[in-house]
Every structure is written in C-alpha cells, then in structure tokens.
Image (tube, rainbow, N blue to C red; front, side, top):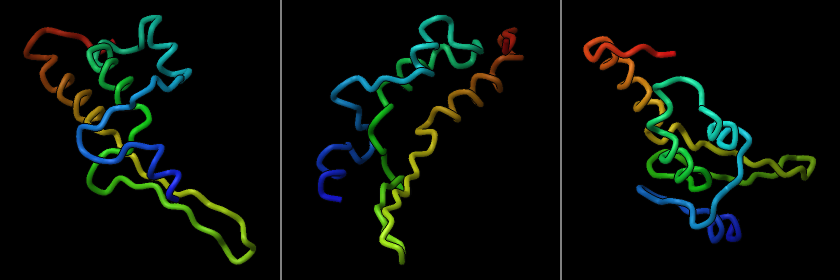
Length: 98
C-alpha cells in the first residue's frame, strides 16, 4: 500500500506528473465522440492517473485464500458534471449533442 500511495497522486486538484496512455484518449485525438465531450478532453487527460479527493480511494485486500484484491473508486472527477452541464445549456445556445 505504501508503494501505491507513493506512486499515485491523491487529493483535490491533483494531476498526473506523467502522461498515462489510454486507448479511449488516443481515440479522442481523432474526434472524440460527442460535441459535449470535446471541451473536456484536456481535463480527462490531466486527471487520468490520480485518484482525486473525497470518497475516492484505492484499497488493497487479501481474502481467506490469500488472494490479493484491489478496490478502487475514482468517480468522474467532474467529467460527468461537465457533460451534463453542456447538455443543459445546449438548447439555450442552439447546440446539438451529436
């Protein structure tokens, strides 16, 4: 667990010190789906890797057969809120989601 804590950033506003590769983000470079998600690309890229604040966590467990389990909760880190806000504003601003 010490190694997890020393490797992964925890807390509000934390960003990854090194780029974390992701097929989803790599695909994003080619147009990234909905108009609603395009303004959030940089946020998603910066937040890929760190855990974030509040109820976000990483825990390591062992069970009765000595198997190791990793429990994580990272949440959307504001990403879901950004998409919902985009759609709430879209009709007033004459935008379309796709």
